[in-house]
Amino acid sequence: MDVISVVPEMFVIPHNKVKDFLYQNPKGNRKGINLSMLRNSANEYKNNWNQLK
Picture 1 (cartoon, one colour):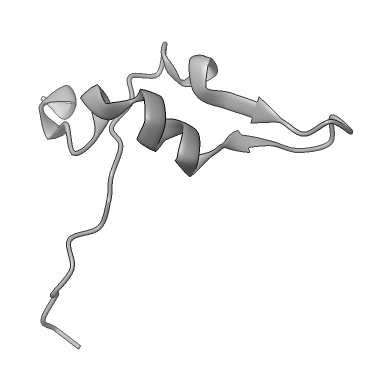
Picture 2: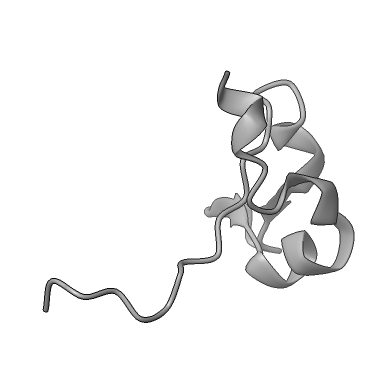
């Protein structure tokens, strides 16, 4: 299992932009970020490791 054949999908989002992608369910008891939303509207952050420099 030391060989990785699939590269994980990563979104490197600056901390001040995370709130733009937060989702809260209708009950209001859960928050998170939908992967589908990131895939549709956050392409500039996909695999953007330069954000960490």
